[in-house]
Image (cartoon, rainbow, N blue to C red; front, top):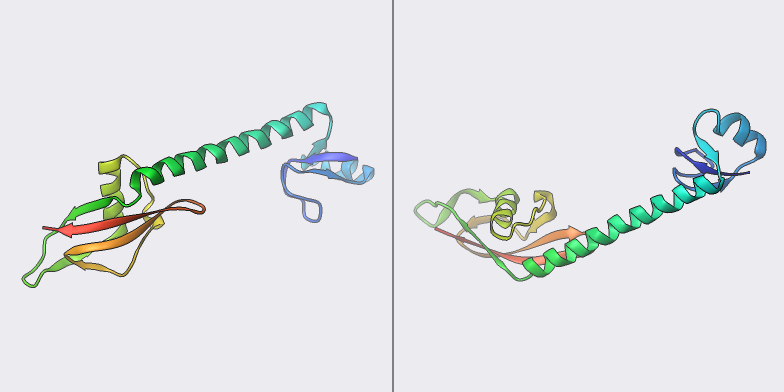
Length: 147
């Protein structure tokens, strides 16, 4: 009997999959416990719609990430900071500050954990950073620290 799984079932499949189970197992165990439902026309249509919706969300996320990449690629983010006598900053510039500056300047929300900085920023100057926008889509930016 073909069933659509409503939850992950060990040894059978993951949620949302169309699987073949033995008649007794499906009728006496899976369906009464709400782990699966019979694969009729309505259930198959719902499964197809769910997969299409999931793919549409992925496609829009990729398109948005590519648009953000073109906005950010090779741009310079300027951060103003105070320093001591020898040009050393009080503290260091963090990914959180870079993410806030990107949000203010380019209106793009970036998670601070998705920003990788080469080394620590503890002096004035220009530094390279990489912003991960989506799986496999990254933008290289420059961070300039000045007074």
